[in-house]
Image 1 (cartoon, rainbow, N blue to C red):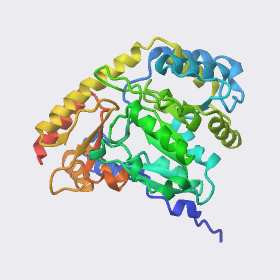
Image 2 (tube, one colour):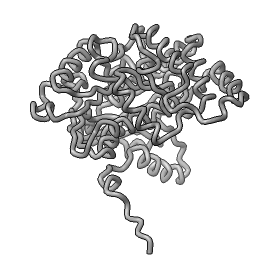
Image 3 (spheres, rainbow, N blue to C red):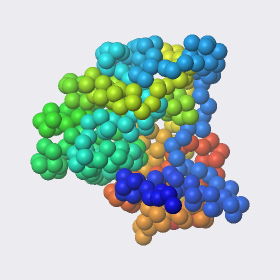
Image 4 (cartoon, rainbow, N blue to C red):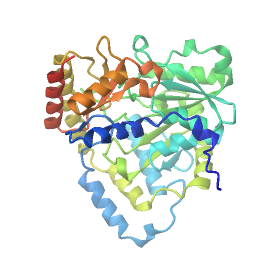
Amino acid sequence: MVDFEKAARLKILPPYLFKEIDRKKAEVKARGVDIIDLGVGDPDIPTPTHIIDALKKAVDNPAHHRYPSYSGMNTFKEAVAQWYGERFGVKLNPDTEVVSLIGSKEGIAHFPLAFINPGDIALVPTPAYPVYNIATLFAGGKSYFMPLVSKNRFLPDLDAIPADIAKRAKMMFINYPNNPTAAVAEPSFFKKVVEFAEKNGIIVCHDAAYTEMAFDGYRPPSFLEVAGAKDVGMEFHSLSKTYNMTGWRIGFAVGNSKAIEGLGSIKSNIDSGVFEAVQMAGVAALRGEQSCVKDMIGVYQERRDLMVRGLNDAGLEVESPKATFYLWIKVPKGYTSAKVATRLLDEAGLVVTPGNGFGDPGEGYFRIALTQTRQRLNEAVERLKKIGF
């Protein structure tokens, strides 16, 4: 008899949030309910045509059919460096400070393997994208959770981290604009992070996937814009949200050359890099005309305004976010996050994400993703008003 007992690293993991949501959604859908999915942040807008055309052209070139470089094509890395310089004023060496990723999730998941030894501590925000904690656990590390709460504008309170924990910590994850809270951070906060990291010898990992999804003229900064940031850390970025390329699986990490080298060493032993035709499409995205990004922002801004008005009219409390395509909504009095999510699914056919699924401090909130058409969002609002709170 073969023993298929799972490894200890799998036994300690919480259920993956979106897998559980998919299970519950399938149960309700099987009853014939018309589901409006506001749960997962997967853009419904198609990838811009010029990017698709670049892929088609690259696929026809046999030179792209062989193993790619694990660190990325020079052309792609140069495009990343050029884009960072133009967008953030950050100078990057494409040879040593840029690495291509099979989506930023892959890079985030692999990065702790390069620097976390069993028992090492990573400072991890909560509520947060689950992969920061999971990646730490897979590397044998321990997560010290930094609560993100409204009184601190959903920024971690660095002063509240015990001195002994700060000295033992090997790395810190941060993410702004933030998923799930939609909070933003200004350079003054990043400056404090740099000072904290320098003092305690901590590698900073900033997940910047949503910097290009911002509204009302707001332009989120890069962590690397702050003086000294490249000395202590690096930044993950993705083409997924900026160019509606979630299924293409392409992103990049930039910053400190030792951090990039460490991640590259892991990748060279685990994967064989990004398909070069997809990288050429990425080049077209980064170097091409950026009106598609402006148009995308306009669509989500309209959806944001529609849903904020509708939610407020339905008796729910939500602030209008400056960035991301998420709304972080307070649950009504007498409800828990799970109870709201369950009621919305059972009685209104609406899939939302309970805040506590991102971490205990997320209790009292639920998240909506603006990844449906205006027509479907209007329908969602009408259903909300019908069931009432």
